[in-house]
Each structure stands twice: as C-alpha cells, then as structure tokens.
Amino acid sequence: MAAIKRALLVVNLHKKNAKALGEEICAELEDRGVQVRSFTFEKPEGFQDAPYDVAFSLGGDGTVLYTARAVAAQAVPIIPVNLGTLGFIATVRPDNWKTVLGQWETGSALVSRRFMLEVDVERRGKRTKLGPCLNDVVISALGIAKIIRLNVESVVPPLTGADGAEFLRLGEYRSDGLIIATPTGSTAYSVASGGPILEPEMEAIIINPICPFTLSNRPIVLSPREAVIVTVEQEQRSGVLLTIDGQVTEALEPGDRIHVYEAPFPAMLVASGRRAFYEALRTKLAWSIPGTGPGSGASWQAPSGG
Image (cartoon, rainbow, N blue to C red):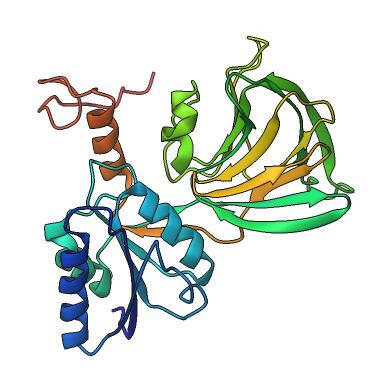
C-alpha cells in the first residue's frame, strides 16, 4: 500500500483542459490531506529536488519526457495523463486518472521501468553533465541540407576477470546528424529516420544516422552497458547542435566529445506498459486491420515439440 503525502503536478497549459484537470486533481488530493505542488513549463524552477511520492504529468509525450528528466533520479513514479493525441508514453485518459491512482496506491497498477541515458559534453578537457534523457540524443547540423562529420566510438565494459574497458571505433559518419535513442525513443525521431522499433521496457542503445552520405551506414543496436562517444570533427561546413529529448539544446564546437551512457536510474511510468504501447503502435502506424491481430478472436497454440 503506497501512502501519498506529497504529490507533484507538471501541467502543460498549451493543452486544452489542462488547467481544469490540474485544479481537479489538486482539489481531490488536498481533500485527502496530500500536499500538492503544481508547476508549468513556463515556471518550472524549484521542484526537482523536493521529495515526492508521486508525480502527475498533464499533457502529451513531451510533458512526460520533461517530468521524467526532473524526477526519475529520485525514483518518483509518474502518472502520465494524455491531453493530446494518442501518445506512446502518455497513455492515461483524463477521465481515468483517479482509477489509476487508486490502483497505484493499492499496488495493483503496472509500473513500467524505462531505460534512460545520461549525456555529458567534454570540451578542451573539461567534462560537463547535461543531464538524463528518456527519448533520444540528437546531434545535428545548424542549417538546411548541411552534412556534418562525426566520429563514433563504443566503450565496452570489461568482461568478468578481464582488465579495463575496450574502445571500439564504429566509424566516421557523414550525415545530416546522428540519433542516439533509448527503446522508449525508438518510436520517435529514430523510427522516422528508418530506425528499428524496440519493445519499450528493453534496455538497449540505438545509433541511427540521419540521411547518411554513405548508404551503407545503417542503424545499429548496442548493449545498454556500453557507452557511446561521439567526436565532432574539426572541419565542419555547418554549426552543430546537441538536442536532448527535443527540449534541451547545447551548441557544439569542433573537437567536442559527447559521452552518452546508461543512467543509474530508470523512469517509472504508471499504467504505461506493453499493452498500451502496442495499442498506440497499431493506431499511429495504421496496423489495425479488422479481423486480424490480438483481440480478433483468433486462437494461438504453441507448436508441439519435435
């Protein structure tokens, strides 16, 4: 049984009915003696380090990404209420938030643990942490139709009994950019760039070039324990930009080294499990064909051993 003493609301006021729903949730929780703090994208300062028992994300997938980066390190579960179109991450209906909260309180709600990444930028020997990432890290050109040059390495942790990590050069990418995505982010920019769709609770790292100059440069999926190091080569025809989850940006310089590696914590999403993911996948990608697929009434039986 989960007791709630403090709750966080992150409200995207650009979404229709967000303000009204936020007020409804606040009123319900405060009537139960819960201390509630509510923040918007416009004024987000001050909530990241406070202890919360649960967080509500009111908006779309972007609101969930923002909330996860802020509270995942404190192991705060997030109830992602969807106020936009059908989302891959925000899957709780506005009229169902109270039911989902009750299920979480009693321990019967599914909590999906999502693999996250950390991002550092190393510049002239100084390494700066930019924070966690739930969807993807994108390194791209600042301009239209500009090819940038990136050198990519993988750092493989040592096997049991072996000495030291192993650095593997994956190669030089000449492309419009590079996407480094999580399984959660596999259905975002990465899939639009020809990347694979991964089951969201997997642990893996996708490296996906954007419009590569060399057609043999293909997406690759790495072990979650590996780290990826991307070096911005010296000669560039364009400025280079780093973007985290489509929301945090950092201008890069030639010679910068971007370190992307497994975060020491997952994002915990309430009621956003496999079923919700596959329902969103079928709907968004128009895979729903009447009379076929799960739920159509067709039976399945495991093959007998031979």
